[in-house]
Image 1 (cartoon, rainbow, N blue to C red):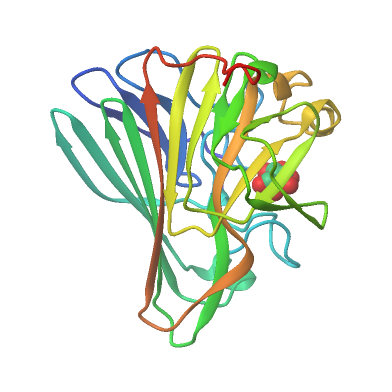
Image 2 (cartoon, rainbow, N blue to C red):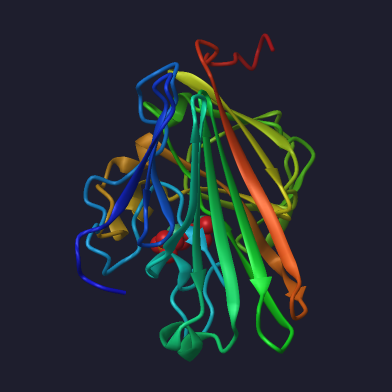
Length: 285
Ligand code: TA6
């Protein structure tokens, strides 16, 4: 946890896809697919980018817990820690980067276990695949939660739709509900934990469609703070709730137990579909 400017790794494919990953947080902060130079991830213009606070936007890595836990920063320390590069492999159509974070004196004061957390970012021409793995390198069993807190950009939240969650149970404000809509639209503060991590979702905004596929994670969080929530955050402009939506691959409600030497992994894959972004009319669909 330092105050130096962020050190970032730029990723590319020969067809023009690009991504930027910050070593602080092991944090993907930009993704532009080859078919379109537009940024696909939301990154707050007033995000704190000096390593003193978690970055507001991109894909924060949450570990060793999702949300609040006593004596630990919200969503854990991984997004506040300096990761290091393990490997990099580039071919014409693929750029693959692996970063890792392991225990040090600072993390052990918060969470007393040895671990190896790896994030592999695989950039291809219209797809980015994020794989998170957790290895228990300590002598004791531990349990963890966390996830990939992906912030998507949109030109208009009111014309943004999320498909694929119909009939899923979700928890919001401690109440369990069933999703009755084929098309989820955001019209107010939304902070839902859908009890599924394996569905294929379509995120449609006026400018494009992104197919979001996760595996290994147990839940999907859909979050937009809306106007009141944006105003309360010092690192997000008041109107930014209109141009972002989080669709997160997480382990939230029940921790995963890992014995010594065991490894868990989960992934979220984002596929950009050129030209297919169109508002689906509820009446005619
Ligand atoms: O994942 C959704 C959520 O847990 C929300 O409840 C909201 O608080 C958000 O994450 C952001 O948390 P942060 O610690 O980044 O301000």
